[in-house]
Amino acid sequence: MSSLAILSQVFGYSAFRGQQHEIVEHVIGGGDALVLMPTGGGKSLCYQVPAIARHQREQGVTVVVSPLIALMHDQVGALEEAGVHASFLNSTLTFEETQKIEREMMSGRLVLLYVAPERLTTPRMLSQLDSLQERGLLSLFAIDEAHCVSQWGHDFREDYLALNVLHERYPEAPRIALTATADDLTRADIITRLQLDKARIFISSFDRPNIRYSIVEKDNARAQLLRFINDEHEGDAGIVYCQSRKKVEETAAWLNDEGIAALPYHAGLDAAVRKRHQDKFLRDDGVVMVATIAFGMGIDKPDVRFVAHMDLPKTIESYYQETGRAGRDGAPADAWMAYGLADVVNQRRMIDESPAGEEFKRGQRGKLDALLALAEAHDCRRVRLLAYFGETSTPCGNCDNCLHPPETWDGTDAARKALSCIYRFHQQRGQSFGAGHLIDVLRGKQTDKVTQFHHEDLSTFGIGADLSEAQWRSVLRQLIALGHVEAGGEYNTLHLTPTAREVLRGGVELHLRHVSDTPTRVRKGAKGTKAPRSKDKAPPIALDAEALARYASLKAWRAEVAKEHNLPAYVVFHDATLAEMARSQPASLDALGQISGVGEKKLEAYGREILRVLDTAPG
Ligand code: ADP
Ligand code: ZN
Image 1 (cartoon, rainbow, N blue to C red):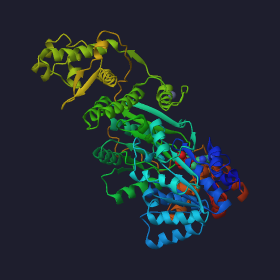
Image 2 (image 1 turned 180 degrees about the horizontal axis):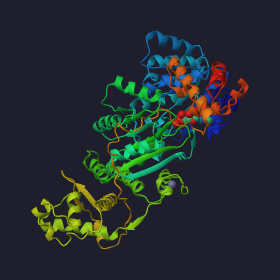
Image 3 (image 1 turned 60 degrees about the vertical axis):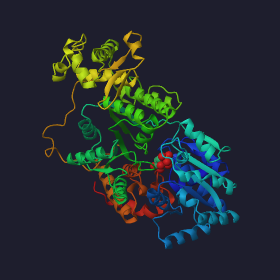
Image 4 (image 1 turned 135 degrees about the horizontal axis):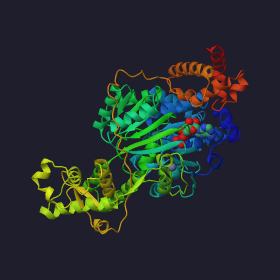
């Protein structure tokens, strides 16, 4: 069968996306490949279609290396639903189950086998692979999340290093390595460590046009988050990233109090609790996962509608990875971040105080600077994001800055005032103070501390009364972001850096974004009195009332099937596929089979049922 026929008959899709076709053909032909594609780009099909094609030709098995044991069950379930014989081997199986799967593999009946890297390199597995190779039944190796092999990456796994054995021991089996991590260093590392120097490299654009990027100034971050969820994502599934475990727990509890179904996830929770929360997130509708970065890799839930950051990530790479988990289905999704002065101070300090070597720290500072520049930008966020990954683009029209160009003001003068005030502190008694006190002095506020240190006598006392506290915070944030001021010591006191002199002399212009002075507050008395949250989120396409009723019936039917098969609902059919069924109301199996996402196996297994549901739906 041609690759296109497999795509349409097995997966029910009518066309390949982007470079998928080229990649698939290259691998079917026996070539090695390194595939760099953003999350949601469609990497799975790049090895699944070749696995099926090569199996049809010569009965071989494709071995998929994946670090994510917890997700193998669902990945395999999705393939079996589509009629592709697949299994996984990992530590969750009993001895009997393992033996049964091994028999399937050794007979050559199995099309895809998912294994964790530590399993693959056991003597038992290697001798089984030897035997497969001898009988010409070893078809292909797919190495998913290939960046795990690199120490530069953020998910380094020791076990991945041993994967070079594949090339040495099974030189005839082609290999395809896939990752969504783009930077040059990691890429080079993957090629060397996996010995992929002969592989063809496929680099897709890293743009995710359906994701809308917004970065807001932190005011009252929780209230801002709640407003964002209530106004724009009521009933939607989403991920909220926090830096610490404690903050994860607190934020999740608080969201629940506010009537939002939220669950915590971090490495400090019991493995069983983590699994339960992950399953709930994957299987139920509209769950918000509040998590540290321990959560997310390999999560292929297609309908995550937003990713929110309550704290600044460490680098643009991690920001991009984390936000990329939104909108894999291609429908509109939001990447939202609240960011403030404390974030900048904390991130800088964490680097300064880490025990790492000076060279490493320099690298980290450079990466943080790039992220801060993105956060402070007045122009298109996407243009900057893509530029970081080496792509040039034009303003996107789908980020906060494109949609609501921020008003800016010339902050050069204000910056000089702040710097001279820090300088005066130092001059007076060699002292330094934190941002709060500095702002009080600039604004001429008579506080106890001002009296104590006689700061009303400074020439800089009250010279900044024309600016609000929020505006001053924004000035300081920029000065720290740009490296003219450093915060350090136990109390995060502020110090000038050598480059501050240049600003003081007026040689540097600072353009700052206007902060809106409308405070975000939780609506008083809202709790308990507001209308109950509707459980039903909007369908992915506009439907009239009758079609909506059909859509609801189809979803109810899907929930039953998913439960029976112990799989997430989206593995049975995506929302978009159900919505299209509800809209076009196919009257025959043939017509139903034309809908995107309905392959032959699913048509055979569910076709009649679906026609019946459509027939008997109210409306
Ligand atoms: P990745 O692994 O790159 O993050 P996936 O392989 O999970 O992405 O694919 C993302 C989504 O896009 C999945 O829901 C998949 O079914 C869908 N998809 C991939 N390729 C196609 C295609 N050619 N046509 C339609 N949908 C596709
Ligand atoms: Zn833009």
